[in-house]
Length: 144
Image (tube, rainbow, N blue to C red; front, side):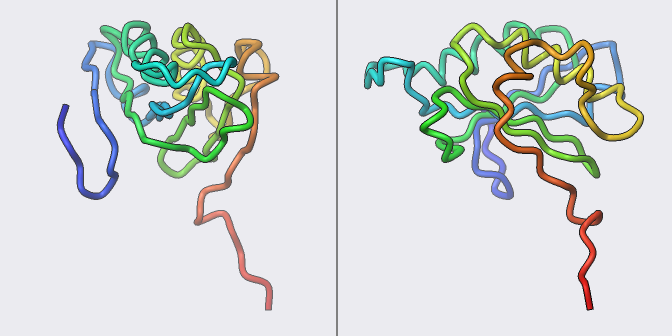
């Protein structure tokens, strides 16, 4: 794993032939999340989710990164989907085996023409687990 000083998280970029469409999407998984029992066992459930997501993304050009805490502890296992110039999404109530859902969401996001993850086709865990949708900074306008 390489360290990127501008984003203090583990990084695992996964190359593929699918090319540029998926290249702009990053999945960030909270590696310190505990499971629904609150267990402090290691590896933590969040780390297991990160590995499941990496497996699900194998052979596809989706960046999978981890961060120590997304601050969404009440909603347990959490992850975020980011795409340059688009809305960002935070999800909670995931399981250690939600990696395929995160990859499916990333694919929908990558091919979206309006910069939003379409509701139709979104895995159920990403529908019911939505915590926040955050606008890109350039969309915000100051009011006089």
